[in-house]
Length: 239
Image (cartoon, rainbow, N blue to C red; front, side, top):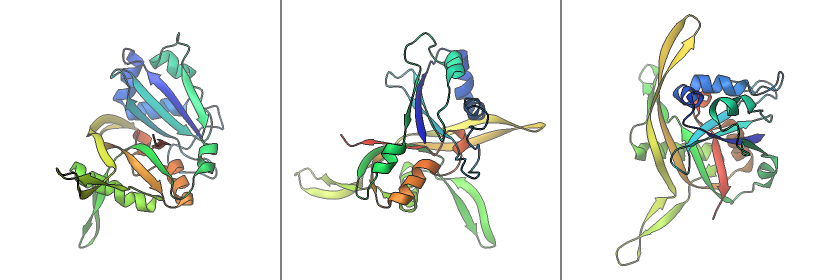
């Protein structure tokens, strides 16, 4: 697996076009792979693992940072021409995730970020009901904690101190750093539909509890709407 990073120029028309439609972004990224190397757009097919991507706000508050995880190394030349800084010496960077995945061990702690589509299916007396968004930040945190157990990791807690400096209560090392609603048009066959997604970005600390499951989570992502910029879990060493 490869993780690729590219900064997008917010002043370019191409950037606004891509950011405004996750469907267009997904299709554009899939075209950044040569024939036979394009990752699956939905699920997996044989040894072909799907591509995941995410948009993060830039450190300067302007530029966006695009992260792409894929089984093959992409060529973002055209994307740089449309939405980057073509004359810059820094275009995009790709790293092989293999050494990182091989170094994972139970008990390790990592800083992480993931943008998800937190939804749950309603249980009805007659069977399974519709899927609905999870409302408050607290419930969104609980949604991620629930999936952490299945994904080979946990969210550790830390002690909060009272005014006297004594341990008062435990809090998870997790926060919803941003949340909102994403709406865009999706073209399908001869009709056009509006897609509405509730999204939340989580930042925090995780602890690896099952290496095999955690590797699968890193490769496969978390939750729904993975074709629309959700699900990619990225990790970094603790400071």
